[in-house]
Each structure stands twice: as structure tokens, then as C-alpha cells.
Amino acid sequence: MSGDTEDAAAAFRAEFTSWLNAHLTPELVKAHGEGRGLEEGNIEILRGWNRTLADAGWAAPAWPRAHGGRDATIPEQLAWLEEMSAAGAPGAINVIGVSNIAPAIMAVGTDEQRARYLRPMLRGDEIWSQGMSEPDAGSDLASLRTAARLDGDSFVVNGQKTWNSLGRHADWCQLYVRTDPDAPKHKGISCLLVDMKTPGVEVRPLRTMTGDLTFSELFFTDVAVPRANLLGNLNEGWRVAMTTLSYERAGVARLHLSLNERLNRLMADAKGRPAMEDPVIRDRLMGVYARIATMGWTTTRELQAIGAGRQPSAAMGSIAKLMWSLTEQSLAELAVDLLGLDALVGRWGKNLAGSRSTTIAGGTTEINRNILAEHGLGLPR
Ligand SMILES: Cc1cc2nc3c(=O)[nH]c(=O)nc-3n(C[C@H](O)[C@H](O)[C@H](O)COP(=O)(O)OP(=O)(O)OC[C@H]3O[C@@H](n4cnc5c(N)ncnc54)[C@H](O)[C@@H]3O)c2cc1C
Image (cartoon, rainbow, N blue to C red; front, top):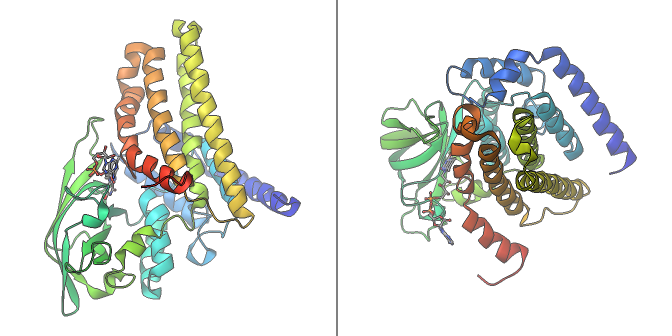
């Protein structure tokens, strides 16, 4: 990093920490730290904080100023993430919208779509979900079958989505549909922005083993979606699906920062327990610590290279996802061996149950290993 960039990032960090000290309350840190997410009446507390962050330009500093961000450079984004994590501050409630859907709207949306959707998304006024997976289309997303037929000025949508995170809270869904059944499978897909209050949309929440209604199934029966809600060009939905992360590259650092927060909490909760003296447990603790540190260094090195103008490496996302998910599971299992039965209930119990899904969500371990083999190591398919 050049001296100027370093100075700018330090000034950015100082401005943010002084704002954070003035606005973040212990109640908010508690609402975040208990890991209740949007469940159990937490949503309005977190939405209020989201609005405070957004109105001050701190909800997504990576976004362009024109849309409510700060055009933050990568070192500035990293500084913001580190300070949010160190303070235990909750972020925007629209995680999927802010990190995945907004970049696509910015890149391929119309001016009307940008003006209509981005601001309420950033403030958490409208919550978004992403409707990709179907009962028979997960890893092989391109085989999705939910159909949309153009009829005058509207698409008529019929089909089913599943594993839809935030589905029961969502006001809008970025929905991937098949608009040309005769084209090769990657080429006949389009992306629609669907108002979840439209007649014919049914949301059925699914309770997972964590006890939460984490996902929903979505059913669409003759749902009329205005043609103006097509995102990107007709039959070019695959390109929209691939347009992510352009404004949130440093978001990958969230993974090791959140693991680090949890490791620190585990050490605090386990203080004085006899298991802390067990050499095998201590060895495992060091293993988890070392993996988190390695993730941090790998991410920082990659982000600095991108900041210096190099192309991101094709395999970086897969390396980060793979290391994060496997370390999540090691940490959750370690908590059980350190805290005994206490780790099977409450925060740690939920953490243990939830950690199983990390090797599936956002691309399974096997798929990420395939990507690494082909694009990272250059092995044949
Ligand atoms: C916490 C969580 C949140 C999610 N949120 C959303 C969401 O908001 N929106 C959404 O649309 N979806 C969401 N999903 C769904 C997720 O994207 C899919 O579960 C994932 O893509 C895998 O698809 P699948 O479940 O159909 O499994 P499948 O694709 O059927 O895979 C089954 C098994 O086969 C393996 N496999 C498949 N293909 C290959 C291959 N080519 N080579 C080797 N092994 C292979 C897989 O690794 C897996 O072990 C979420 C899932 C989780 C767990």
C-alpha cells in the first residue's frame, strides 16, 4: 500500500470509530452478539440501527456515493469491517440485498430501477431475498424450471423455489426464471424483481434444526410481474447471476473476522474450565486460531493486490468459502469439547447446529473443490 492510501485508510478508520463510539449502544451490541439474527422480535431494533448507519453513509461504504455509500477504497472497506467487528456492531439487515443483489442492479439495472430499489434496500426499509435454488436445481442452477411467459406488458410466473433465506421477511425477491425453454440451459434464463405482495405468491417458512425459520419455500401461481421489473436483458439472467461482489470485494474479510470474534468469545466462556488444560484441546484451539489467522493473511494479501490493480484470482472466493466453512465446523465442535453440555443449548448449541449448513450454503464443499481444482490448480474437469 502506498503512504497516501495508508493515510487515507487511517483517517477513514478514525472518522468511523469516532462516529461508532457516539452512536452504538450496548443494547445493539447485545442484540447482535446473541446471534438471534432477525428472529425473536429483534428485527425492529436492528432495522432502526440499519437506518442510522445508512443515513450517515456507513451502511455500505463500498457503494458509490450516488447510492448512499462512500466510494470506499479496499483498505478503507477493510478498516470499516475491522472496526464493525471489533465493536460487535450489527451490520445492514439486508445482507443478501446489499452484497449480492445491489451490485447487479447497479451494473445492469435501469436508472429507474436504481432510483427505486437501492435506497430502501440500503436502509433496510425493504428486505430482499434471492430466489435461485429449486427442488431439482441447486449446484446445477442452470437447470432451473420456474417459468415466466411474456404476456403483453407482464411476465406470468409459475413454479417453485426453495431454501430461500430471509424469505418470510422479504418484501422483494430477485427471482431467476426460465424465459426460453428451447434455448441451451444457461441461455434461456432471465432475472425478475418480484414484489412479494403480488397475488399468487405463497411463502411457506421452513424450520431448521437450529429451531429458526431460516428459509422458506416460495410458490408462484400465475404471478404477474411487470416487464419493467426485468433486470438486465431478456434471456441474459445467467450474466446477472454472475454479476456479484463488484462493490463488496472486501466483504470476504467478514468471514475470518466473524470467526475471530467467535473464537474470542469461546475463550472467554471457557476460561477456568478443566478442559482448557487438556493438551489435545489446546492443540485443537491453536489449530483453529492458526486457520483463522491464515484466512486473514490470505484475504488481506489478495485484497491488497486487487487494490493495486491486479485481477482477482479465479479461485479466491472458493478458497475463502472452503476455509471458512470447515473452520466454522471445527470451532463449533471444539466449543462442545470445551464447554460440555453447556454447549448443546443456547448460543453455542445454535452455533453447532447452524455450522452444519456452512458447507452447503453459497456453493457446496464439493463444488468449491471442483472450482479450485480446475481454475486454481489447472487440473482437467
Ligand atoms: C444456509 C443456507 C442458505 C441458503 N440460502 C439460499 C438462498 O437465499 N437462495 C437460494 O436460492 N438458495 C439458497 N440456499 C441453497 C443452496 O444454494 C443450495 O443448497 C446449494 O446450492 C446446493 O444445492 P442442493 O441443496 O440442491 O444440493 P445438490 O446440488 O443436489 O447437491 C447434493 C450433493 O451432491 C454434491 N454435488 C452436486 N453436484 C456435484 C458435482 N458436480 N461434483 C461433485 N459433487 C456434486 C453436492 O456437493 C452435495 O453434496 C441456501 C442453502 C443453505 C444451506
